Structure formats: structure tokens, C-alpha cells
Amino acid sequence: MRSKYSGLQIAIHWLVFLLVIVTYCAMEFRGLAPRAYRPYFNIVHVSCGITILVLMVTRLLVRLKSPSPPIVPKPSPMLTGMAHLGHLVIYLLFIALPIIGLLMMYNRGGNWIAFGIVMPHAQEANFDLVDILKNYHVTLAMLGYYVIGLHALAALAHHYYFKDNTLLRMMPKKRV
Ligand code: HEM
Image 1: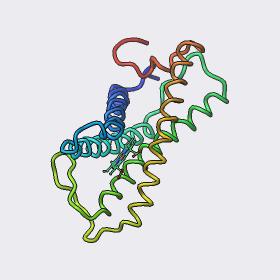
Image 2 (image 1 turned 90 degrees about the vertical axis):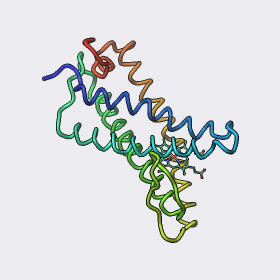
Image 3 (image 1 turned 180 degrees about the vertical axis):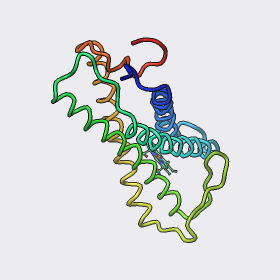
């Protein structure tokens, strides 16, 4: 069995990491830009968000097909269970969040742009539905901060406290 994740899995992991930062920043800092520039922040947000969706689904399919490399030394069953639950939450969250965003934009019923392309939208807007979707989107996005924070803390605890290979399994190049 391999001692590291595959090159594809490592590349997707760190690409999603960067895209998540850009996606959050585009929303959190859009208020700082002059009004004329805000549409560009939205385009960056939705384009990166859609890319995250595609990459997370790809990653989930790869993960279901190939077993993860073992952690050495082996953590307790309780830690392993918590890690599996945490990873499941990350997959579900970063798949559901962009899907809700897409549904929100679709049901606004107006033209919107991602990747420089005008995207499909409903013939008629449904703002009641958009409000509900927006609440879910914002709540899940806030939850995302905690989930990412815990994920990063867990990776660092494995590396510096438990001194196992959890983090190194996901690092590019030869580090084992
Ligand atoms: C993993 C991907 C995504 C993350 C982490 C994310 C995160 C966020 C965050 C933090 C906000 C700001 C919430 C607030 O106002 O406090 C937001 C707003 C928004 N997101 Fe996303 N988002 C993602 C994907 C998407 C996608 C794919 C779309 C649409 C195609 C989308 C559409 C929107 C819209 C329209 C808003 C503004 C809502 C409003 O204030 O009217 N998002 N998102």
C-alpha cells in the first residue's frame, strides 16, 4: 500500500485549500471595494465556488475508489472515528454549500456570470426561495470556518503532538 495520497488527491486538496480562501475573501472583503468593482468580486466568488464543487465531487469519487494510505503509528480507534466523521462533514459541507449557491443564483431569475459566461437562470424569480437558500448558504459558510479550523488544528496536532505521518501523507514531493 502507498505511504502517501496520490498526486491527484494531493493536488486537488491544496487547490481546494487555495480556492476556499479566495471564495471566502471575495465575499468578506467585497464591501471594501468601490461599488463599481463589486460585480467582479461576485464573479470570482461564484466561479471559485463552482470549481470547488467540481473538485470536491471528483475527490469524493477518487476517495471512494482508492483506500487512504495508513497513518503510522496507528491512532486510537476513537481518533480514527472522529477523523472519518470530520472528513465526511467536510465533503458534505463543501458540496452542499456551492449547490445551494447555484440554486440561489438560478432562482434570482436574472443574468449572472461565472467564468465570464452568462449562466442559466429561472424564467421567473422566486425571492421567497432565494431568502431561504441564502440563510442556509450563509449559515453553512459560517460553519465552514469552524470545520476548516478544526481540520487544520487536527492536522497540526497529528504532526507536532502525536508525531505521526497524517500531514506528510498530504504533502507534495518526497517527504514521507
Ligand atoms: C465552497 C464554496 C462557497 C463558499 C465557502 C461560500 C461562502 C460564502 C460566504 C462566506 C458568503 C458571505 C455570507 C455573508 O454575507 O455573510 C457567501 C455569499 C454568497 N454566495 Fe457563496 N460560497 C460558496 C459557493 C457559492 C456558489 C457556487 C455560489 C453561486 C454560484 C455562491 C453564491 C453566493 C451569493 C450570491 C452570495 C451573496 C448572498 C447575498 O448577500 O446576497 N456561493 N458565500
